Length: 195
Length: 294
Image 1: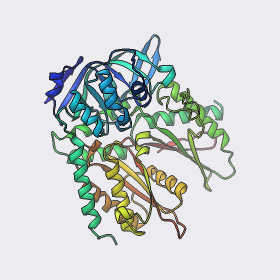
Image 2 (image 1 turned 60 degrees about the vertical axis):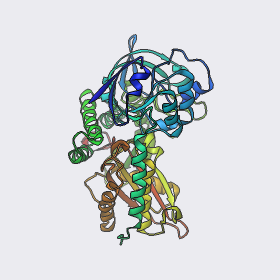
Image 3 (image 1 turned 90 degrees about the horizontal axis):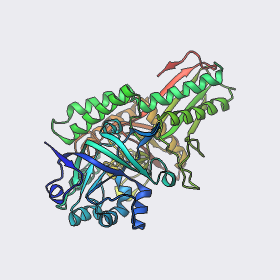
Image 4 (image 1 turned 30 degrees about the horizontal axis):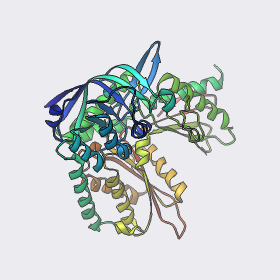
């Protein structure tokens, strides 16, 4: 079953989500990666309100077509690089939904639990499937300062597919998988059938 | 068309084909993995999405992934042929491919922190030139994304934390450990290029070069071919799965190369490649005619 999530995201809607739920996000979201996160953590202002909104860890391929921007590819980038900033950025600007890939750390999981947020993962590298969920570009900030990949693109998405991997209940889908893989590694290292 | 113009168009075509389509052996490997994953599982969902993505990219001639990667060109040239016109043609093609949206503006000036407008920077694109004795020119391009490069690793054996000694068992421990450390961050199902031996620089280059090998082509060294097969099965037991969401299919290829080493050094270098293993090549005559795509 797929849960539809519509911006602005309400606390009730977010609290009802559990890790392993598939969702489809619709509405206005912003992209941002390393430089934007650092900027948001160090600053107190943001060009548009992020309250009850979503930030997508993504550096899209965007080209200018006349007066419009066309998003040609828009998959997620590795979220772990934003781990040093994420909890603070969520708290400061009231973000409820983080979208990225690869999993995040304890501080973000704790922020999701404490502040009522979720971390969603889109399929890494699925830039065409995900670009199709982008309806249009509403605007862009920090394009000159940060460059195309690092800019804050304000986009409207429809039915953007993702998986809940951190929820408001303190659960992280990757924890169990990582623990099991470490145990399996220990088992495999004990097997001495090489040569 | 002049020879230089022909080479620029050829390189542009190479970039387009590499960025916007997956080699058929990699697509087949993804399909094989998909068939094995249970319906309704996250791993099946991921693989369905990836295969749909490959189709969309191919049909629309758009980049498979928004991280269009670092362009690594591998040129094998006849003796005595000046490589500079080819390198310049490739650089012009990189700029043209950036304008056309086949490549993202993906190069950052380290000194200023600014984006390089046409992807022509210091050390990027990257060229590797070798010579052979025939008169044909062979060119390969590998586009390798930053996320997968970030989880690539190098070990200096012995590595006590893994109980890894200077033997094949130690190499196996490094390969499996690299996967555990990467979890879902390098966009698995991955292909691992491995080099045993060499120094820190040559070892990693040799590891990355292994990514040019087709998945269905085992190592010519029987011992390494056996490890490529067996360790792939071991890796399934880690249960990391596509995107680290769990399941068997975190690796679809393991390619092991080697270089000789100094007595004091025993490096194991691991080039982690995401599922979007974008490699493509062709052979041509010196004037850019007689092109045979690989």
